[in-house]
Image (cartoon, rainbow, N blue to C red; front, top):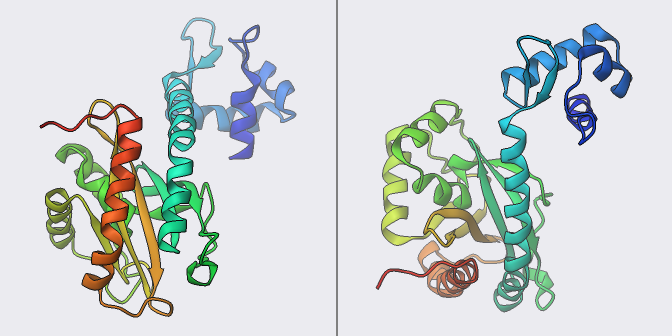
Length: 255
């Protein structure tokens, strides 16, 4: 991964088109090793090759990554204070994630400064990834995908058992996602790990598209209540926070 990023970084405004020899010198690798990385990056459309000169230039996926990075920075800038307020209000750890294929990528994570005894640490941080199918944020993000995209994602998903209540059957997962669309909240009840529960709600942009999810994570050791009891306590604040982030992103619900 590091070498691939070094190759991408070799392209710049005055060096937008490079050959294998140029790239090899720029990243300090021999030509054969450089070519293997370039071939992979070309296949993934991060770079492209001019059929006549045989030289390379950045491809459309890099542009997509750039826009995604800008969107992510804007999203976390808007959401950060609201996520911290939700963590302080509830006393639990609050996170925000984006969808990247079959994974959820954490882009923000906040712990309460008021009731730290209730926070939990699963060794997650900004940039961490978890499988979408067995997480509350993942189920929110999957639930609002169009059917064709969802099918492609699930085709790439190994629905292995990770917790005592993991949904490992595709039809059961689809039924659970339908419930998420109806209620606008996803629940993870020990599907990722024993004792872990979380509740997630969608964040929408000005077009109404679901672009992120916000969750509150709790553990049975600090909150031994039933799922319904926890939902009654946590969902109103969770929904309010997700709605306010969406509003600040320009979303206006239809009357």
